[in-house]
Amino acid sequence: MKRDGGLIFQEMCPLLCCSTPEIASSLCKNIITSDSTNLSSDIEDNEHDQCLESDRSQSHEPRTVSFSKHGWLLVSQGKYVVFFFNPITNQRIDLPGLPGDECFFDEISFSEAPTSPDCIVLAIHVQSFWVFFAFIRRGEDHWNSDSIYLESGFVPSYSSPVFHEGCFYFLGQTGCLAIFDPNRDEKDESDMWVELDSPENPCTSPIMNCYMVDCNGELMSVFVGHMGQWVRLYMLDHSSMVWKETKDLGDSVLFLSQVGSRLTKTTKLQVPGLENRIYFSRFNKKEGTCTFYDLSAGKFHTSCNDHGREDYYGTTSFSDCAWIEPSYHKLADQELDWLHKEAS
Image (cartoon, rainbow, N blue to C red; front, top):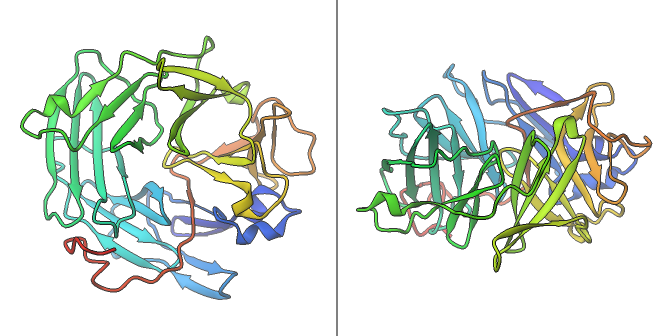
């Protein structure tokens, strides 16, 4: 593990399973986190046998990984600065400054790759009975921002929203859903935010953490009990709007993080034995290995050689830990210009 000023960038082979080094060439092979001081590190890339130096800045404002998707990190710095960063190519796409006069946006995500003309970045803050939001599309030079009064007092989970069917879906702490639609008429902001009457809480036990992820065009949720004493997986049945439990991922593996979760076919990873597992952004301090939950056995593991246990005691989590799909494509200067809409 490399720690230099704040960024941790680590190959997944020692994280997931010390006996399978071939996973280093897999799709989701890297995991990144940051502390509150800096986002700078020397990143060693074994596949290209070179050392890439991440973005360095003289600013002392804290930097946080807010979201991860399509090989890009969405990084926020202080109250106003937000930018895309590719830790593989060391390229950066700057966004216009956030309109942070009313609040500090604690949830920032995006819909498509930042080079896509359809990319939308959404910053949001839910406080008591108010939703403060700001969003911007590729090619725009300012954020569209406003606030909406909530009658129900929706309490979002710490999981990032999922962009699904043209909208951002938010998972509540009790399993309910809220939708932000950036395509609604901006003259009536109340139509942009809708809290659904269903689904309801699928769990009878107290929930410690919950996550939501896009599963091949469907919504999947994961609920975790105190210290991982239970883990339950659900798929949203759109016809009845009910969370229906499932205990099988088939030939897929699930990577969970508060700043971006993803489901991946194990055939893409080209590593046998990963199917029906859920990898958490939790680490064993002594071994330096990542924690995964075996759905078939119903147990947690921190390496492929242990016998597993029914909770994740003894592990440490990172709140802004991001799984990343490495992208080695070097962009032209025009593509790095956010105001240039027709990028790719």
